[in-house]
Every structure is written in structure tokens, then in C-alpha cells.
Amino acid sequence: MAAQLQPDIVVMDVRMPGLDGLAATGRITGAHPHIRVVVYSVFDSDETQQAARQAGAAAFVPKSGPPDHLRAAVLAAWQAAQHHPLIRQRHYERPSSVARLG
Image 1 (cartoon, rainbow, N blue to C red):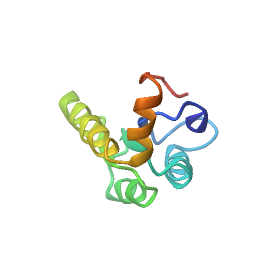
Image 2 (tube, rainbow, N blue to C red; image 1 turned 120 degrees about the horizontal axis):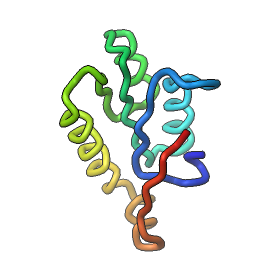
Image 3 (cartoon, rainbow, N blue to C red; image 1 turned 90 degrees about the horizontal axis):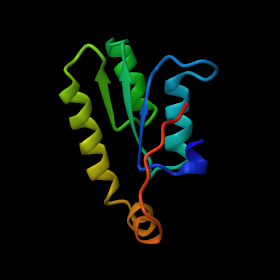
């Protein structure tokens, strides 16, 4: 779905039906390096955070934290994404949209 929609940011949970969120993060960032993934999960172990980083996540935010942490991570990832040439070009070609994956 990310390939079809080409979002700037994806907020990804670790546990999902079918493909787990870390594997999905790796697929998205591997095929579309301009898409930033913020992993948002109830699983707040060092191993999960490390796996998210290895999969290419821009940030990891535990669900147990304050909502401001998620907002800050999404904003930081979005700001970083704006520097990617594909993102800059795409914003000139079409208006941005918001989509929920999943």
C-alpha cells in the first residue's frame, strides 16, 4: 500500500495481522528510502527498538509515553523527509494527502 500511496510518513505498529510491523518497515524503507517510518508500539524493549532502527525506522515511540512524543517524532520525521529530492519534487506535482495504512 505504501508503494501505491507514496506517503511522506508511515506510523507503524509492531504487531499487525499477516506481516509484522518491523518486517513491513524494512520493506518500505528498503524499497522507498524517501518514506519515513515512525514505529509506535506497546513493546518497549531495547531489542524491539534496535530491530526498528535496523529495519530503517526514523523513530521509535512507545505507546506508554505521552502523546506529545508521537507528535514530535512524526514532525521530526516529516521535516527530515522534506529534504529528500523525491519528496520535494512530488509536492510540486500533487497536493499532499493523509492516508491510513492498514
